[in-house]
Every structure is written in structure tokens, then in C-alpha cells.
Figure 1 (tube, rainbow, N blue to C red):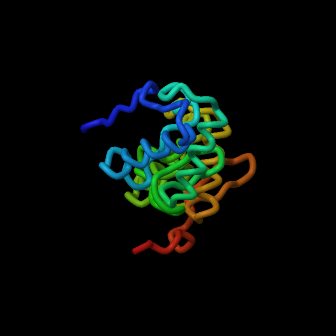
Figure 2 (figure 1 turned 60 degrees about the vertical axis):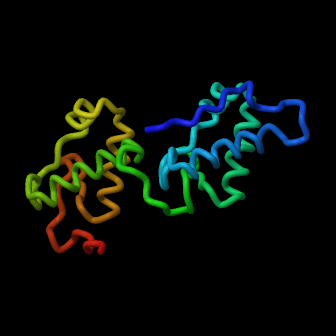
Length: 170
């Protein structure tokens, strides 16, 4: 895909337009040409710092400017994304715990994991996905909250009976 490049030396650091507004305008251009699509991550504060040679506080102001213009929304601890709050994110940009939960949910729906049978252990999921125990627990918590699984203390986590599964979304 065509990539717009805005080197840091294109910024007018001495002019009347604040640097954060200039960078926000460059990000806006990337959104308008489709380089950054709905739900996709806007470059992180750290990425903006490197790409444009700006301070972290300036990068934060860029995100705020994009939000104020209605071009992006921020999820605490996850980042800033193109579009209005609630815009679906591409699967490859979901947090890892949500990707793990989606994979298990798909295995349940496909019948690979059957009701009242154990789901893979925390240890197996940690090894398979290369993640920490907390990430696996977050994925299981998500599935539990949605009704896909239930946990029996000291026994494990099991697939819920079909009648407890969430209603399909249309």
C-alpha cells in the first residue's frame, strides 16, 4: 500500500502553528487517503516521538487533537484508534487476551470444545500463545462474563451448556 511519509524536518518548529497541530494534520491526511482505516491504531506516543522527533507531551496533545476533531478515540491502556468510540477494530489489532478468547470461542462454536468439557489449561494456553498467566486469565474472564465458559475452583474451566451461550449477534 502507498505510505505517506512526513519526516520530522517537514515540521515548522518556528512558525505560528503548534507542532502538535501539524502532526495531527499529517495523521489526518493518512486517515483521509486510507492509510489508516476505521478501527486501526494511530501511531503510539512512542512511535510519534521517534517518527517526528517530538516530546511525549506533544504526542499526547496529538492524540487529544485527533479526538477533538472526531477522527479518533482512545482506550485507556490500549491506544488511540481511528473513528468514533465503538468502531470495530481489525482482528489483528485486538488485545492479545481478546484474540485468545476469540480463538477459544470459535473452537466452542465449531464443536471442537464441547459443553461441560474442560478448555485447555492456563499452562497450555500460556505456552501456545507465549503470554503471561494474567493474559490467559483475562481471556478466560472475558469468556466467563459472556457465558461461554464456567470455572470450578481447583478443577478447571469448562465449556458452558449451550443454553448459557450468548445470543448470536446479527
